[in-house]
Amino acid sequence: MDLKLYSNSTYNYNSKSQQARVLTEAWVGKNMFCPRCGNITLEHFKNNSPVADFFCPCCNNQYELKSKTGKLGVKITDGAYSSMIERINSNENPDLFLMSYSAKELSVLDFWIVPKYFFVPDIIEKRNPLSSTAKRSGWVGCNILIGKIPEQGRIRIINNGQVESIKNITFKMQLANKLKTDNVAQRGWLLDILNCVNSIEPHEFELGDVYRFENRLAEKHPDNNNIRPKIRQQLQILRDKGVIEFIGNGKYKKIPQNNE
Image 1 (cartoon, rainbow, N blue to C red):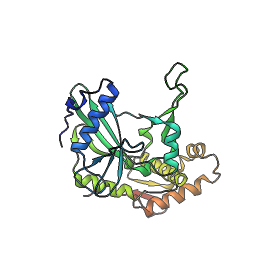
Image 2 (image 1 turned 120 degrees about the horizontal axis):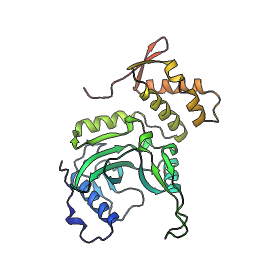
Image 3 (image 1 turned 90 degrees about the vertical axis):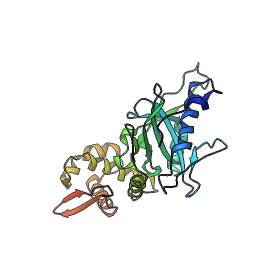
């Protein structure tokens, strides 16, 4: 995989945002494989699809690309807030490619994939409306809060310039696929508890360790008056999905998510 970005494809564009789009999309079209099935090429949508940028000609999965200079950080700018929330609630959003690159060196720094079923309204931040003097006055955009996505949904294809193998990426995608939940409300609870489990440092933990997040979960889910039973329910789901193992007496352990 060549990490260099080639600027000869941007000569016909004056806008820096257009140049960046053409530059990064050209790199994906030339270098990226399908993380889901391992097919060695992706196709670019010809008609400027409003939802996705690429698709796999083998498995037909769709991908959207978002890129930025420098490191990815904890959030990345996206499009219209209302459209994004609508897409999430209707389960029509594609998998998301996240790219960071060096504008000076013209090289890819990081390239991640976030599977579509790790998107919930909670990770979408509403931006302030554009001012009355703006060309699109009143338009409301959004940011994707990358830092709120569980680590199982932030799969590194390139990390600090180091390229992961296709075999490892497709394996991690298969593991992430176990967490697929079409019901957005249920997905929100599952990912919330997964984030809680991820933040517990020891490999083994107790039910009481997860109960410590009760107040935070109650604030996020004010309509639920039975937080502890919900925690136990979601831990059972994570157990059934192979993320954690119940070892008895209210104790669990995290199952290593690798292919070794």
